[in-house]
Length: 245
Image (cartoon, rainbow, N blue to C red; front, side):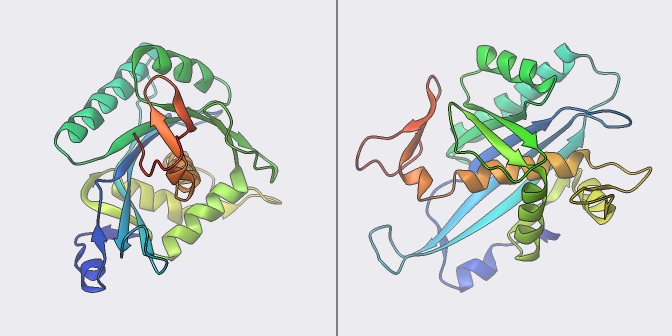
């Protein structure tokens, strides 16, 4: 995984970032055993060469990781909720400063995550996307601000995006080294079951996989047809709409 120090390589190839990035905040609650709750912040940057009406439009996506953090085990639900709400405030500040176009919060809703998603919907206007990790290859369409995330497919998507140098760690990103360490400790534990080797963690990897899964589901042409609205969430945009709002 690369540290994203410069955009010079893309600019040298004629690309330009036309809009501020879409920020993805993903929260993965702890499962059984030694797992920790984990949260990541990933900026999905869209670099374009040419204009949207150009049939030869070239597009490049970069997922830049700004934070990858395990939450302390002794935190109770109110503390975890407060922590994510603070990240939401940070994202809103980025938006006012022009550092992002919009942000969404993804919550893995297996088990206790459902309560977190419900609480966030009541306490923030940010679109909350629930994603359910499933064991099989079923990938249902996005419906009602919820989406399925096949574990193996999501992890494979993270691997491929990383190998294509689409996933980079921002310089001085909190927890960047921890995430890289977890990725290097992933092994095959059984048929179609990649997970952390014994004594290691995979919390950050799964949260990052969730962020990229949501980010890839929102990649155009879907985003050219959908609109993000604080009250309605993700819904079909009017004809001719070209942006997230």
